[in-house]
Amino acid sequence: MSAPESLKPYCPDLYHYQRRLTREVMVGNVGIGAHHPIRVQSMLTSDTRDAEACIKEALQLAEAGCEIVRVTAQTRPIAENLEHIKAGLLKAGCDVPLVADIHFKPDAALEAVKWVEKVRVNPGNYADKKKFAVKEYTDEQYAEEVAFMEAQFIPLVVECKRRGRAMRIGTNHGSLSDRIMNRYGDTPLGMVESALEFARIARSQDYHNFVFSMKASNPKVMIEAYRLLVAQLNTLGEDWNYPLHLGVTEAGDGEDGRIKSAIGIGSLLADGIGDTIRVSLTEDAIFEIPVAQALVRSATKVAAAGPCGSQPDPTWDAYSYARRTTETQAIQGVQVGGEQLVRVFTTRSKWDAVAHKIDKLGDFKPEIVLEDSGCIALDPRDVAAIAAVNAADSAQLVTIADGLDLAPLHAFRLLAAGLQERHSILLKDTLHPAGGNEDAEQFVTSLLSAATNIGALLCDGIGDAIIVNGESAPGQSLRVSYNILQAAGVRIFKTDYVACPSCGRTLFNLQDTTQKIRAATGHLKGVRIAIMGCIVNGPGEMADADFGYVGGAPGKINLYVGKTPVQFNIPEELAVQRLINLIKDHERWVDAPPA
Image 1 (cartoon, rainbow, N blue to C red):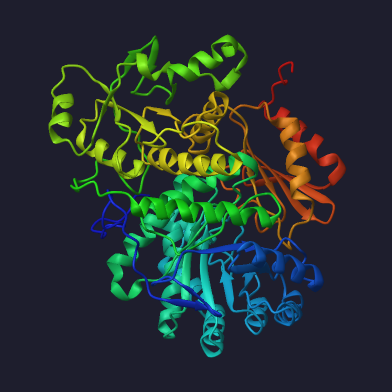
Image 2 (tube, rainbow, N blue to C red):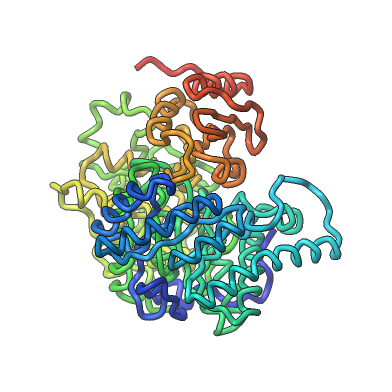
């Protein structure tokens, strides 16, 4: 379902950074939006019933720089323990605001709001039905369910307003209500409409201390949903200027989780969108904080880059993915452009460094040497240079020249807007190549920057080839290149995992289990496996996975094919093998190659 016509733009300048101006929302003593810096959040993995463990973890997160801490509240009795967690933090001299995470239970929200500074509700399951039922709603049936949802939600709004609490209206792709799904589909438009329903109710009570979020595990969907939301808010009027919380759900762990998060979060921050962020990694929560802080620093660098000057109309659809329709070219015996795979370039020096072992690099092979490719490097602000390329008889491969004081994301957008579509574009992660001897911290910074700059453009359909210059080590730069292509969903070369971070709802050890499943299935190219700690992050939020491994009860696992549960209450010690058997039953299994 496409975006409605006559929307106002989501971004005032696609070619230069401008932060979106919002109203202020106060979460305890922490301000969000307006003139405040971008805030960093995380979530407790401890069981909410264990106040001592939650207090200890929250103190560690606050010490690491976490500014807002979320904690799950599954039921009203569990929500009652938030009183002791909050009291323990204050006794320890820590006033970090707490956010209660609510799914399915309005009564838990009404209890939680007594003790925490903010409540997160998911419109898809706060009061609406969520049974994946397919039905045609009449206008009367639709209105009836809206009225029921409104009756359930208004008491929380009234209580938040009375107590001075904040709220996050947090829609998740894949967990939309049956009512929204059947009218809008599992689409960014459905996500936006689901959130706006709740916002209209809040506004009807003259309550405005809330923020929005539009999370998804697929960066393309996440980016489109946030853009569409902002465009809708801009169209509704200046007083709809609510702040946004950004996040990619179930990003996974390690390098893959960081890259996927940077593509989604980093690209929106570069457009000035986003007032708080949370990086969701299947790791201890403490490791999320430095990644989030690095993404905020990266946005600051984008803001400091020079302006591109002109603002031509974009040649891509910001709300629906479609790859630029370039012509195919043969470069060094490799087909580039058109419907070909997005290719991986490297420099001559890096090629020479790995030439002796190219046959052993497997799926991380370099494909084309930049210096021998005939690629044209130019300044996208140079109208004459763009015109000369467009006047060429044959399609050309074009990139941005190094050394320019431009943000790569904005520079390549300008290039794409100026070039005729027949010409292919080689994307770069940076216009200032690394000089060598980077330490671990610099590698993470360059990794996130590469994912933001290249991944965001790929999600807009821009780019027929990529080169990572921010990492001087040949092997690492190639690995990062392919992992960005995988995370952006444009070139799948390995198993894709959707793994949620732990929280108090988790019914098994997510980190250990994720590694076991990776070890058993990591060779299944193109298979997407979701690993979910509980039913909340189960069949809905794993959205478009092929197979799902979901906690159903303590020590018990349910297996899914797509969104359909097919096996129940499997003992945890047997569940990985049962997952393998399920993949085999659906003819998606191949034996792993020799080590």
